[in-house]
Amino acid sequence: MGYTIGEKILKAHAGVKDIKPGDFIEAKVDLALGNDITAPLAIEEFRKSGAERVFDKNKIVLVPDHFAPAKDLRSANQCKVLADFASCQKIKNYFEVGRMGIEHALLPEKGLVVPGNLVIGADSHTCTYGALGAYATGIGSTDLARAYIDGKCWFKVPPTVKFVYKGKRNKWAGGKDLVLFTIGQIGVDGAIYRVMEFAGPVIKNLPMDDRFSMSNMAIEAGGRAGLIEPDEITFDYVAETGRKAGVKERRQWSALHSDPDASYEKIYEWDISGMQPQVACPHLPENVQPADKLGKVKVDQVVIGSCTNGRISDLRTAARLLKGKKVKAGVRLIVIPATQKIYMQAAAEGLAGIFVSAGGVFSTPTCGPCLGGHVGILAEGETCVATTNRNFIGRMGSPKSFVYLSNPAVAAASAVTGRITHPEEI
Image (tube, one colour):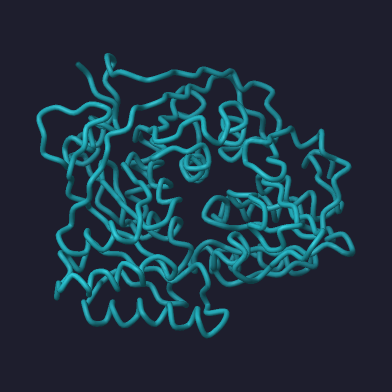
């Protein structure tokens, strides 16, 4: 019997001869991630256990990004817990403000994740790294604490659902649109505790940044992981980010594919030719409509950034549409690069100047408004178009506010017109 890519990675890390959906396993992890919200709880439990040293100071990552730079005293105290623990345990991969970024953009950029890795993170969007062919999944803070002690975590092996995309992709429709379309088709509960495997000719030709956007939102359909088989695009990215990706590694990683006789719970196939940019309407990511059907929806705020769409290609797309234009009077535009490297690159390429000249704000990296933290909270009755990943009630501020999820092109176009706009219009 063959195995899916997800099953192969879990099997290898558990050290078992056979594996199937429903099995409970204990596996060694390659990386254990925590942020300023979730890691303090894990650190507290680690200390309660009586453990003195972490299992491997090089396999733990701490990133203060959610409420950082600290928005208030409580946030500052949370961040200090991370800083003190990192110092005490001599943790190599602690990224302080000024050197940090939004965790799920930062780790791949730093070359910390490679194909075949098993990564756990006390954050639901840890599934982002599935774009690199890694089994990456969110866990709770107590499971993270356990991993700090012995480098292991328990898993229930999920079944796998395969999504095959065919046809020719519209120039304005990227990874964000593909995943919004998918969630719109299957619902926010359509892949609960499943591995979502993205495949097909459209995925094979999809740039790395778009792959990250897709895997990032697997959790919005209930998925445990969002996996894409690694290929030359993956290998080139890994080589560029500083980790060795020579012939030996490429050959090894090329074996990370689902077997022809692998078992899938279900397979979806879609021809996405002609698919327009997709927008998720309040208050669920499954409430998806084409952008050109929502032209009457007025907006008060536009946010471009997050671990879903805060990468340099996203900022370039937005800047191309905003260059020489002005943000509509009465609309706030907030642009948040996902990492310091992206921030510097955007500044060097003149993108930051375009955003500010258009009447927008160019922020330091932070999760900020995505989770209603800071740098763009919505008041009662306000509407926002955001390139973030969730639009639940109260997610970005008032329970009586409204969040629409889109790609960067739709977001930028909407900032100019003051209403949800297909980028072709401007």
